[in-house]
Image (cartoon, rainbow, N blue to C red; front, side, top):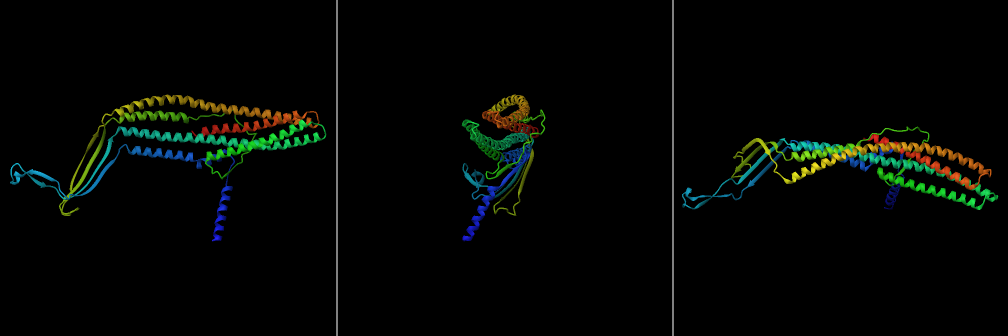
Length: 438
């Protein structure tokens, strides 16, 4: 027993280690999109909604003929047959009196079939059109949800890339800050700088260490956000290996044409028109083909009496069903007419809104590109200023406070440069998403 418990404990402990050490690696945004497409619950839910709309479409197609076949089978044992009162005079009795007569058979069997098919059903035709529109709506809604999810994933992904780069830059700069502090300490020991200068170098080093810690915390938050977006288990470690290429070429502008929101508004307007048509046509009569086929057996001996034949009766014909005028249907038609007007107005508004949204994304890319080129130039100049300041400080030409200012300016410009590149990559990815999912 003790050996079994030891084996069980080892197995559970090993499983915990394996689960804790499982990891996912991504080296580009497309690989992350592929994972999300296969594992995201929101995407899976959208796919089920599309499937549901498809089945509703099939149901509407079947509803055009609206085939029904009422079938019934019954066996009845009349323990007491119904009593009929007939004038007793007909049987030689006293005039003015009645005689009790029981009629019928004790054992009755009935089997009947009544199929019916609609030949002309205007309401069902309109419902089919609404079902087709609903299926298209489900597709567009699914694409919009997928696009929004991918945009959020892209933003989170490039935030992680940016923070990773900032972490590396800050870590390397921290080594430089340590070197500056060491130089300042030596100069202080030699009496070349003041205590205040040494304190400033220590403060600079502590500030950088704190900044590095804050970046790491922000990075962990982004990883948690990415797990939520992609439905990645909490215990799984995410490894993103995406090296920023500062020398890659970018176009000054990219073409964008995504009309999903406008397509959605058009479909909603079409659905409103179809609903109005359905409500109007539901007040028209329906023409159906009907048939009735029945078999009946009556016996005084038993069910399924072989000495008694089954009696058959049948008919075929056409049936016209006229709906009764209903004030609720009239009000429903009026409401549908109003909803149609609202949907048409929203369609025009969404068309303008969709075009402006596309233009805004284009402007965001142009802005990000301009910011990237500017921050690059600023960084190169700030970096040059810092190296000149360091050389002058070593030669005791430049005071320490000017060196620290140049150092911090160089660091800020370097971080801005990396952030601008990550932002440019994100805006480009957003355009790619909008051009792909449409």
